[in-house]
Image (cartoon, rainbow, N blue to C red):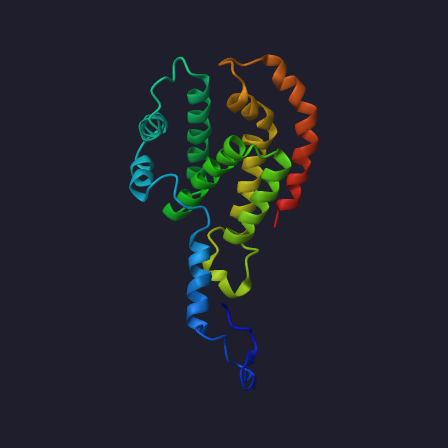
Length: 210
């Protein structure tokens, strides 16, 4: 059972003391471990990212096709769409001149957004909320005392939000269709129907800017 914070059998804990069994160093280690757990496990390894950085556009596509074990690109709409999603994201990140760790977290962010949609059936509103919380941890709005843990600066964080707005959130209903429809085909009307609803929802993404 945890001891009551701020009290001892003989009275109050003297100022500056931490709860029994903890030290400032252990608390910092715990906070660091929690921070390290954000966007884990990595979607791509450092070795895989390094390989892709040496490739041109076609090479990046081929590497991702191999890493993701996509074997039916010519006949499977889902595989083709997902490959395009990841390839486009990686190439966009290349234009941002990210470090390897930034590539890693950004690609993991892309993957987890789709995972949340596919597995948790997250609505676009919940996905935006989740993204806001994640960016608060890995972006510049994180606690000032842990500023050295910020992975992206303000400009990069805002650019990521803008990219996700046009690459994912504006097409959210199409991705829902991709994961939850029984048919492996694109219905052109889906794009028309989704335009009005997603336009309103995506406007809320502006709240994410830092």
